[in-house]
Image (cartoon, rainbow, N blue to C red; front, side, top):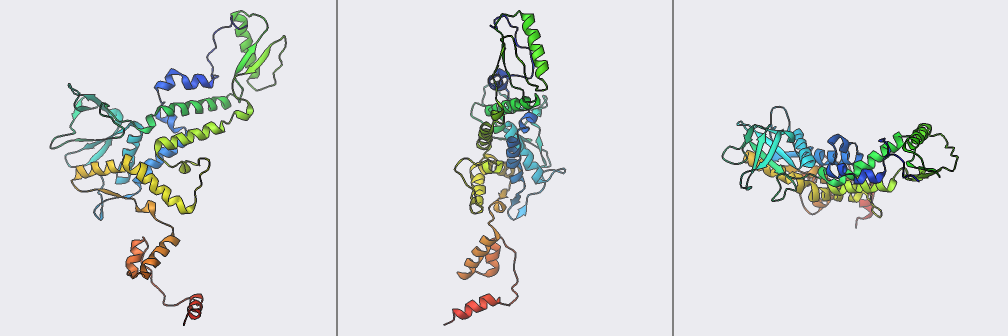
Length: 361
């Protein structure tokens, strides 16, 4: 019986159930550093920010000027999308000269006005920012913000992230503890609290280097955690990667995970990019940034996603050939498929000459 044993001594050995259902993890998704310690989260967050940031941002046929003296548009866009993913809101500070900078979310306090009809933004607890009026100095971009919500909610705030962190924490502690399993050491007799504590201390001390156990006197050991075959958590890990893909909108194949029954070939990779753009990148981030930048500059600002959808060289040559065959100008056909002008040498390869001779009437 263990009725007289002391309360468990705080150690790194906790059960998986304790980690996942703990009040702390349910209330807190963890620090940003902890989240980025999960490889799939780190990669998904970076892809969503860096892919749109690498695209050209244009006003008509011209590139958008740098938003401020210290950043180009690529850095500015990446910072904006990272803020949207991490917090659900991105704050642009606008100077009288029209320069824009991304304000750290921790520098902005959001609260309702007296009748809860307008959100008020306080910069560093002292300066009221203006989001409306003839000369606003703050532009707010939000995702997943309901009518009664003060702020938005980025996917990095999802409670599922807490579960992923718990799984990783358990796995890390398991292997840091030399993969020693957690279990119950039972005795046929009744021990005092001091005797139980002494027995636990001796057992843990002897088992730290993972030496074989010798149990006598009727004592028994029962594992309450994983055995060696289950320690890698393969299926749980794959489910976690799939959840990250679902939360972030990033195609799971980009996170080195393909659901059972799926296949990806070079032919449909372009379709994956286009689906990612249409379903996640454009509605969640790109369209909001385009609209905000347009409002600030008073001119239509658009991203150019063409590099994402560019076909292979073989497909583009085929498309250009078909355009020429149907009567289009060769130079314009090449430009239409994203290929530079090509100068023909005037020489026809022997194989084509032979084919032409065979097909001659």
